[in-house]
Length: 356
Image (cartoon, rainbow, N blue to C red):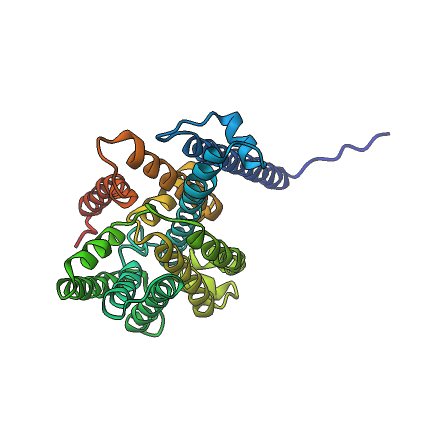
């Protein structure tokens, strides 16, 4: 005689729910990998296009041959001394800004919390312009000044926003005000400087890759090689922090140390990117939201934000060089992209009753 085992309806529902969750997670992981692969492919394609197109058009086959040690002297000079460092710098600067903005926005849970909005880039600019125009600093020392300015501004904003912890909205408001004050310092220093020097400083302030060489690539690459793994390590605390301080503390997370580590990494990322190319506006602001829309439900999507930032800077620099009637600094093109998004964000906030 065979015994019939009746399945508990509650157990069946739980198992169905577990299977549904697993399917959803698998779809999310698959989409995340596919989107990352697509972004990487777009970055590689845009990078190759940047090497091929210019006053002297070089076919892709010749580009590859030159990069592997072949090619004639003219091709080697154009590619290895002019186009390759500029394209590499565009990728690295975009990754730095994109990753920095995504971390700031995720930690502070505020879409306005990007380094170019809350005063981090203004700190880098104020220190760099002051060092350049008043003390005639240049080269690596100038880059170090920009990095020191971003770190100093980040520390000052954090301390001013501290009230038994840091709230995202308070930090953003203090950062905007602090950044405005630093911008006034920049214009005051420029007004007291020689006209030619002030014009060069103004070009840097727009964010530019013009005239960049291996001297800017190697330091940025070395610093990013250290900062990106540190950011990935600190990002393990990002999931709980996005739930709010109370929920994160309830899960056993060390809220303030985790937040401070993430903000420190993001500040340094913005600082080194600004040191290499100037404050390329709105890259950090838009890269994170675009990445999160491409992979919904995947949290901060930090790798996707870094790739998105690299793609934005590559496309903007290509447009600035080849698609417009006159050549423009890359920061002007990124501002054209980012400013409408900022206005849209503010309009949505006002419609939702959160615009103040």
